[in-house]
Amino acid sequence: MVNPSLSRYIEEIAQLVGDRLHGIIPDHHEVPDNLQRSMEYSLMAGGKRLRPVLVIAAAESLGASQKVALPVACAVEMVHTYSLIHDDLPAMDNDDYRRGKLTNHKVFGEAMAILAGDGLLTHAFYSIAQTARLGVPASDVLAIVEDMAVYAGPSGMVGGQVADMEGEQGITDLEQLRYIHEHKTADLIVFSLKAGGRIASATEQQLEALECYGRAIGLAFQIQDDILDLVGDESKLGKKTQSDVKQGKVTYPYFIGLEDSRAEVDRLTRVAKDALTNGDIPNPEMLLDIADYLLKRDH
Amino acid sequence: MVNPSLSRYIEEIAQLVGDRLHGIIPDHHEVPDNLQRSMEYSLMAGGKRLRPVLVIAAAESLGASQKVALPVACAVEMVHTYSLIHDDLPAMDNDDYRRGKLTNHKVFGEAMAILAGDGLLTHAFYSIAQTARLGVPASDVLAIVEDMAVYAGPSGMVGGQVADMEGEQGITDLEQLRYIHEHKTADLIVFSLKAGGRIASATEQQLEALECYGRAIGLAFQIQDDILDLVGDESKLGKKTQSDVKQGKVTYPYFIGLEDSRAEVDRLTRVAKDALTNGDIPNPEMLLDIADYLLKRDH
Image 1: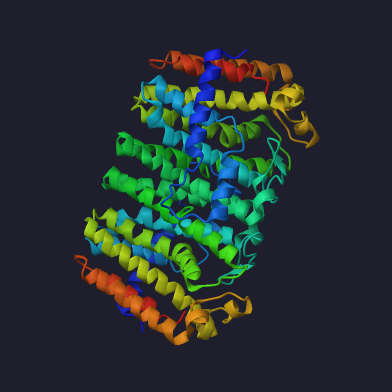
Image 2: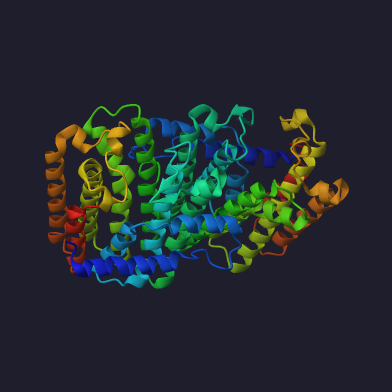
């Protein structure tokens, strides 16, 4: 059971972010109609908005407002969305559907899907820069820009994607799988937490606590994905299970078994929560609830 | 004839930028080997480095040093390079060669080419952010980040690329062609000039002068490209001429004829030079020489 106040919180933020993302490119910018439609199609394709929730919850845990955190929350969702559009391309995973809807290139064509991804990635940095107009010091906003470039870049998410692609020829050990999970999934989650902290002028100690929390829940999130793919309930997940096995993808359960994978998710959740508790975070409650929610989720 | 001191200047900067771009991703970042190779392959594929030259020349025209301008100069070359990699993809222009070398996807495969482009675009923002470590105020560096996101983004270069792609179904007027040239080519040139100005803490008046100069030479550069494709010397260009006509691409000469196109390049060059002269730029000589060089170029 999800804590009802957390459910409400997530819904509220998903609404807030969705509203802002709808028409995110300001009117005074001349964007070709089809490009605008293609970017919005994927932004509005019904994601859980987990990363924006984490940006805002981290900012609020240190006393900053949702309003100030909103542009960065939208930016991380744009980067996440661009990565899905490019991942789904025929040259990559060649997926026709995502969350029950046609993928971007199936609707708008491959060329437009590539450019919509490029546009979203670029515009994310515009959105981050707007934070300086809301009273956050320029040096903190610039640190968020730099973090985004690192966590989403060649040594971050893009690097994880390359490792995942190359791993299709055979992952031989857990360390390699962990590299993929850390960079392909956890890095953008770590970014979300640290960015929320920077928006609230976090101390170094607080930033470290948020980073540690983010690293742990990011990895737990991905291992839980592996577990749900193996033994989840298809009606709750809204997609077929055992796709990893069928595609010959190696996962955490493949290497260490189901029970040890579950124990690892438990352990990482405790690591995450302890980091917050020991990290001088004034209002950690929502982040603690989110860690439990991710641990217990069945979809 | 190119002014010999300008030739030397361009060579010197191309060397400086090439050295910095070689191994641009810091060693302490874990980048998958093939991704690193793919990004470097295209960064080192022998471009003219026009945009980095413009960043550095603009910064120097206002008294800033080459060293301080170098990270942004590298960033604009990364963004230019990513745009070429994605443009060449099978889903886009489907080119096998660029500047006599195999295109990125012909060497590394389509998936890696998409990711190398994504990596370069993302890392460009990291490079820009480094400027703050060289004494430029964070608020100015953040303005450069925002400019890059606008001029390279959905209402800038990506928008121009979409318009170009859609224009293959038939461009009917000069205004449409001008939109493509302005955004696909001129926007990143305008960015280069303004960023150089911001690095040197330009006044609003100086920024406007640099922007006006950039807009004019950017458009002139593209019209000159159209002209050279029609009547240039293949041995000097290093590629076949009349490719636009053969591909059914409309160009400036198509709409207004060769003589009026040449006159337009002349006019734009005057506009560019006048903007500098009237714009309170202390050392405009190199930028003035660059305008002449672009006007008279035969390749």
